[in-house]
Image 1 (cartoon, rainbow, N blue to C red):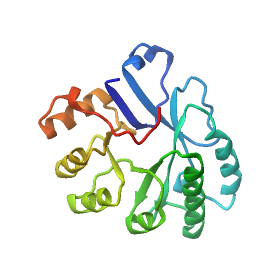
Image 2 (cartoon, one colour; image 1 turned 90 degrees about the vertical axis):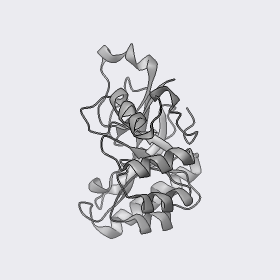
Image 3 (cartoon, helix red, strand yellow; image 1 turned 120 degrees about the horizontal axis):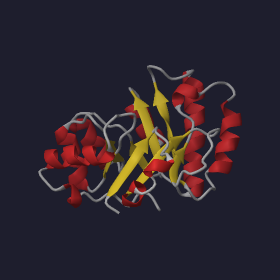
Length: 206
């Protein structure tokens, strides 16, 4: 399997079926989304969507994570800029951390200006920071704590290299108009390797 798209918001359509044989695409879903035709996905409660009624969504999430196509929980996390009420974000995120531990699936993380809080909370669970654009100092800190890093259209080349050297680098399209093949090409150029040399970590059980 050559290409893995760790995180995308675009649901594949029927015309892409043949190309999907060459890819593993993890579609980001909410607990209320229909998963018809989705081979791999992550399901979680985004911090932007956290309200006082988050527990209703969490009950749906607990059912969905048992489905075989759900390979990760997320995107979830903390956001100090656009997220909901902070105390509710923390409660909801902690519930998803505990769920991930119980079902043995990793978290796909959304984190804005809350890295310290996320590191303190995410103990004993596999986590992948999606859309990582941080500087090398932050990348080193996260990698030393056991986090995987996923990179999209824009990235810090040194941070990308650190994650690659550590064997914990993922690539993703997120909301980009680029294809995952094009993002592999960009990452490969930055790393001075061939796209075919890129191997993803074993954090997800396919």
